[in-house]
Length: 374
Image: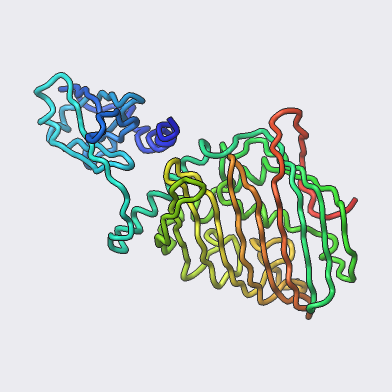
């Protein structure tokens, strides 16, 4: 059932044009798509006419119906479903029966044995499916996330600043509408400081990195490799197909030789690479890992430019991050960062851990708290 739901969004996006008007209908093809190996129905199979946007999809039981306009009699009709070999026939060859049974041969992705160009296309398809299935694999809003936040600074290998806080997140839409704009408008948070070790480092003891952390949740923001429109700008490679907690997964590495703001989320990135882990059964994202080098960062956020009059910014920045997901939500977001600020060498670790999800008795929040304390 989960696979059936997964494919629905893809079908809707690709075959919405099914409603377009064609010419005079000369034939209606009816049939059922089944798995050749098991005789089970193949739900939501893509069915279309070659070199056109005219098509439909099989239903939950594999049944389909497609009306053929007069001007498309000479076309081929194709059947395509994830996990099966594509099949096509001349349209006219399906005119002599009232009902056809179309058998699709199962096919597993043996990605490691295909050439680089073909592998890249398969990996792009996997990432597209992961992005399109986000509303089905992650929690929709409204909800609260109850989190703990810890931020540690080490300056010149000695002075330490530690911030601890409880964070309440209110997300009006959640993962049902993944985009950067919706995340900015719908995801708000407040925090209550529980502990702080004070040091003579005023900016660090006053601000938090929560915006940067939430920005790394690419599933929620539909950013970087979770944005299908950007995938052609990445070098992709299959790193492995491990089994994680009993579920087979793909681990896909990604890299931009010339990092962009849209790809890396960092205005001044000079290196950007990482890995994303996706579960095969439902295309849910399990983990995102990344590494970035940047000439400099704005202290208010790595995605912001630095004005010419601004002399207080982070220099020679390097960082890595991990976002781990389970149970329809992030488990934690971790950011490790080193840089130079005001002549001091800084090591910084920020971590947000999601402890609880609330969908009732919600605490509604209408802004974001960028500073610690009152």
